[in-house]
Length: 143
Image (cartoon, rainbow, N blue to C red; front, top):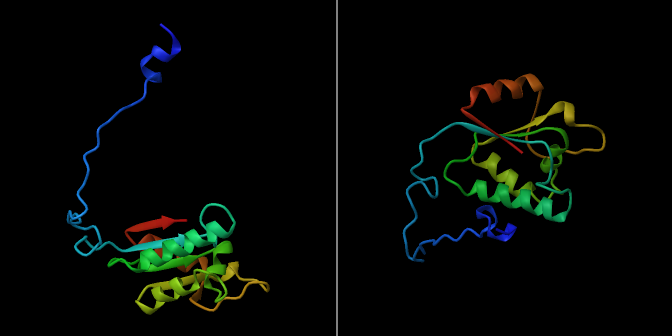
């Protein structure tokens, strides 16, 4: 028996049933009828993945997509370098501003602000307040 004949070296072939294009979305697909859970999204970087243009585009796309859902976070929390998301020159600023317009509290950690960072959105807050929020909500998503 050669290495190619061993079962763990064999390709896995699985038939996948095609879903017709006109098939309805499953319940909860757009969050319209999902049970409401309080949650917070905590960001520590102004990008997703690598610190390049693509990473900045990904975080902007994520925030835009999340903002279109029926269930939006109760809190968006910005710490460390992610406070740059709250500057009006960041690509994700428009999406982040929409959260504030729809009732989501945008919290910016005061300790993360220094003279070279500007913040044009959100409520400056302490770590104690952020910890209290993270304890209060049912779910915390970290980025």
